[in-house]
Structures are given as structure tokens and as C-alpha cells.
Image (cartoon, one colour):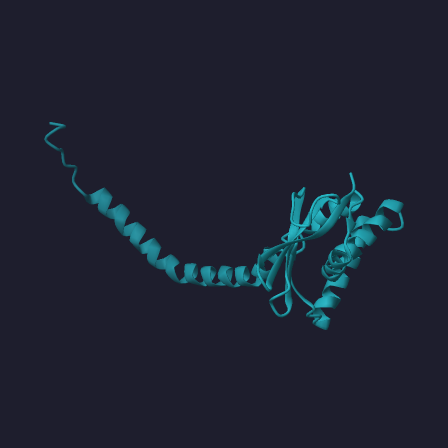
Length: 179
């Protein structure tokens, strides 16, 4: 079966909104599809693109042929470059870690240049880990907690000692049920 990656039009008249899909090349443009890979909204300025890298790489690896428009979209978001790097890994030209490093370097350069051809929504697989962003905040929270615990520790010790003394000195009372 000849699989194509192409745009499937949605939206109303003069307000197009596209789904990027993998489909049999013999199907109609807006007909049945195999899998939805992402979205493309050319109405926003800059155009919005949200692509699932893993699904796109899977279909490109299986031999799916992207249309010209989809190829330019995938190139802009980095899927075609990632496919190029994966081909180097399979041939043994370099390791997977080297490919990941090169892709991250390329992605950082694109962000630094501020290329705003597309407003790219990066999938979770390629987003920065949240722990890296939250690490400074977590350290600050630990510092605040430690300073508060140092200030509150003597007061809690006093309350605990008073409570234990009160328990020791309190006379035992019996309830009517026990008697």
C-alpha cells in the first residue's frame, strides 16, 4: 500500500485548518486516513504547527512519502533532520547519543535565531524535562523549609514536653461504661 503524509482540510470557508495525516495515496484528500500525526493552522500569525515526532518518524521510516507542503512543515519542525540523523545511526556513522546531541544543538540554534515561520508546539518527547526547570525552585523551597524548621523546632519541643507532662500528671478517670 502506498502511504502518503498529507494535509486533510478542516475548518470553514476561507478559514482553513489542517490535520497532518498518514493515508493511503488512493484515498480522497479529506477521506479515510490511517493515523493523525499533527495539526497545521495557517490562519494564525505565525502559522501554528503541532506534530507528534514519534508518529511522523515511524511513518517516514516505513516509507511514507510526504507531499511538498507536509515535507516543508516537517523540515521546519525538525522531523526530516531527525530522520536524517537516524539514518546515520542505522548506518553506524555515529551513536544515538551523538544524534540526540546534534538534534538538540540544531533545535537550540533554531530557537536562538528566532525563526518564526511556524509557531511550533514541541511534543513532550522533545520538551525540556520539568525537573530541570523546577530544580532551582525546589532548592529554594528546601532552604525555606530548613529555616522554618530551625525556628519552629524549639517551640514544638516545648509543646511536646508540656503535653507529655500533662499526660503523666493527669489522674486516670473511668467512664460509666468501664465501671
